[in-house]
Length: 279
Length: 69
Image (tube, rainbow over all chains, first blue to last red; front, side, top):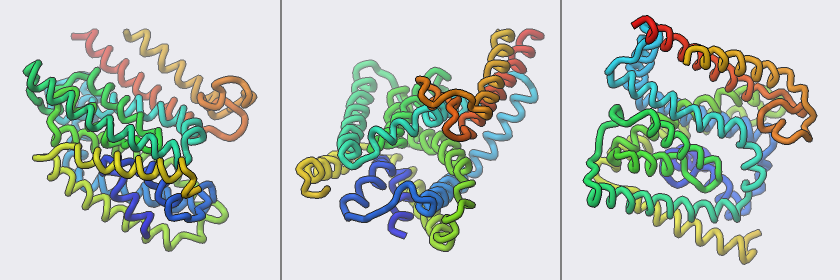
């Protein structure tokens, strides 16, 4: 249940869920067989719960976006419709992160899926957020680039945000953190960048969990069926509360508090693992 | 552009078929990353290639309409 809450919160807060699911069991000295069928099935359900919470939270937006996209394909022509533009931005933004995930996920997890690199990348995640905030302030003040709504960014900028989201393959780098920073750098304000980041994350998390559903039917998976269902519901509820909080938070606040958290948590973990206080 | 989109459809369908058949030895560089290695079925790669083929078809649709107008 602790893992379910951790997943629901850390998937959407810009603090890296993958980094936390590597670091916290190692810090607490849990012996988790991360490649075991029952654990993988459990993780699939947690992701499914998170994705469904996102779909539920943005249900009105998704209905409008899917309708606008379908109408655009049937018409065979792009229009000036806001939902249609956001829909195509999400499509072009999802392609790079989807391809990076399919092609490189296994290799990256194999190389960096241990506590020490995760701690180092968590510190890097902090610097990405600090640097993004600093750069956006400079753009705003020196180059007089005011914030603009999501539907006015270009498709090239949509691809850039999608590519930034791909950094989250590295354990410790946050999906929402990197895509919110990229959103800020293409002139979105914090609220719009966060909303765009969560909309962009939805198809990726949903596809990743749906594609893993066969793992639920493997031999040992049924052992954790009850825990998985309860965990999935808990992860969904926590994710819904997290996205509700974050969309309000980013109306008036920025990424720096999360940056400080990642810097301190990453540095403390790095020292503990590098000095072999925890092995 | 329409011809390019058409070529992309064919290429992605062939890549999807290769990911389903996964005929290559897993020691060949990039064969695992591209989903062609014979170590296990590469369903995710096949789906990704099919989605790209589908998006290329949508691109053809947009190009056809642009040519008419």
